[in-house]
Structure formats: C-alpha cells, structure tokens
Length: 144
Image 1 (cartoon, rainbow, N blue to C red):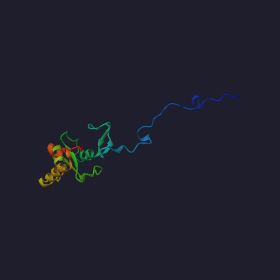
Image 2 (tube, rainbow, N blue to C red):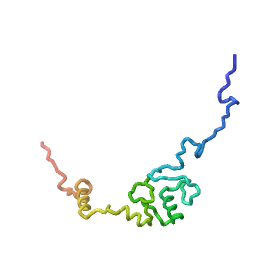
Image 3 (cartoon, one colour):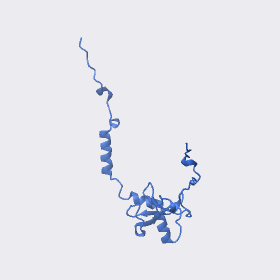
Image 4 (cartoon, rainbow, N blue to C red):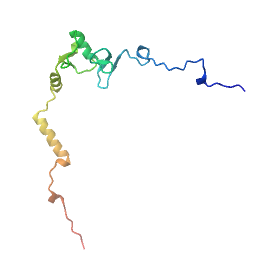
C-alpha cells in the first residue's frame, strides 16, 4: 500500500505566512476611509496630528491652503455640515468656541417652546403629577 502524505507535510509548497500590506493588500482603499463619525481619514503616518497613521482630510486641505500645520486651538468647520465634502470652499477655520457657536446657531428654543415642552412633560409623566394621598384611597365597606 502506498503512503499518502498530508498536504501540510509537503516540502514542495512554501507554507510561510505572508501578509500583504499597504498597496499589496486586497483591502487597501487608496489610503482613505470614512471613520465611525463620518469624517474622511487619509493615511499620513508622518503627520504630527495623525491617529494610528491617519489624519482628517479636512484638516489636510486647510493646512495645504495655509501652507502650514494647524495650531492646537484651530478647528475646521464644514459650512454645509456634510462631513465628506472637503472642498476648500466648504471649509471654515475657527476656534473651538466659534465652532460650538456655529453648531448651536438656530437651535435655541423659544420660551414658548420651552413652556410647551415643560407642560407636556408634566401632563404625560406620572412622577411629575402632584397627588393627594387622601383622595386616591377609596375604602369600600364590606357587606355582612
């Protein structure tokens, strides 16, 4: 009877594990991807503000325009609030305080709206209603 060799025991096959990385990897997408927050990240391992080798594309676009790295107190705002639209005409350089103000702009509730929300909460939530314990208890007499 002839002895059959297992495939893993064959010496004519190179069994060393070779992982493709970078451009050789089938998963390589050109060094760009959209992160969990919706922003485009670009592979720039030499950038001082990289996170695991990737930098936000909107920051890179603004830095290229200014011909310098952004300062820690500078923030880039997307004017139309579309996070993947990184055209220079859609980007605005501002401070974090200005950036917060831009996002809050137009989102302030009027006093009438606040009152309506308060009244609605009191009407629908049982824990906000005032109860009179003596009125809620009813004593029933038992018949003989």
